[in-house]
Length: 458
Ligand SMILES: Nc1ncnc2c1ncn2[C@@H]1O[C@H](COP(=O)(O)OP(=O)(O)OP(=O)(O)O)[C@@H](O)[C@H]1O
Ligand SMILES: [Mg+2]
Image (tube, rainbow, N blue to C red; front, side, top):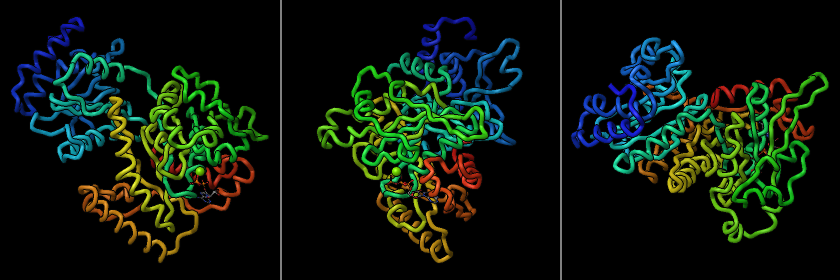
């Protein structure tokens, strides 16, 4: 029905469909009248979409879509879907991210996107024809890339924006490694995750955004910048390539050493300004804007954030798509601070990002970086402390459930309180003295970080 229409006709069809839909249209009506012109406007023709697409054994996502490739007609082959759309009736509240309707719809979409049959799917949309939100899937991470957009506003520009994003090449996932408690393994994790991902042939950039310590560069025996990165952050038209250094993982037996890129810390960021002046000079979005300019060149960009909730930490979290939070089982403050980051700091930056027409960042589950081998009584103490943190968050933050962040593997009716962790390993701290990432120098460390990569990313 929509074949061969010009873009303006497509918008007209969509706009007409929106005008004719009843204010309380049920899901079936939204599916019938809104979803086809919506997908058409997003660039998926009649044979490039399929309704009630089987994802696993039982569940079916409302729509799957993919451009036809030569003779491979998507609606016939049903192979390699690219986009899923989960449709709801207009009575479902998708506008308020705290509403159960929104939580259920986004969770449902996330499950579809992460199903084994959805490997090729990169994008997901939830919509009730009043609101629409786009999610990106990067490996195992599903995160929103737009806020929930109201279709009452300029539909044309919303469609244009969604289309631009969906059609763009896959971009790096930007991850900030953060806990406002010091010494929990942020720098160590950044370095070793970067190394492990590099060994898996991913293109990785790491950013030392802790200028007061510049530990990341120290760990590799690299001297910090003296103003170069500051200038890039201040510049309206930054040439970020000027501050990117290639770091080769050299070994006598490796002929072609793998490498990742690094942006070193800038001592002038730490020395030159006080906090008030610094915030005048460097806007909150400075780091994100700079990193976005090279986002297509990498698979992962990892930011080592400082242990506080001041300007650099805020910029690092603001810049990220996802935040990875290490904590220590034997350090109460690191557990409490992990909870605070998720219930307060990250939502604070989510609000700021909305002002830029963006969504996120999301918090990834917390992991225990076990700086000491835990004994059973220590584990019991930790679990009691976590139970209290979870309970307090529910009371103080409007029912916020921290449990999936501490115990990501426990499912409903299943009290499997397993955590993600990296054990204490002497070789991890020894590697600091060798100025080499432990995951490169020591096989047992590499195996541990490979597990971490599999838990979170691949
Ligand atoms: N799993 C581990 N096993 C053994 N030692 C570890 C482990 N993780 C981190 N360490 C060591 O713990 C110390 C602190 O780690 P790291 O510097 O990464 O923490 P941080 O959170 O970045 O600290 P800061 O808040 O000061 O930036 C380092 O000496 C590091 O080598
Ligand atoms: Mg550090």
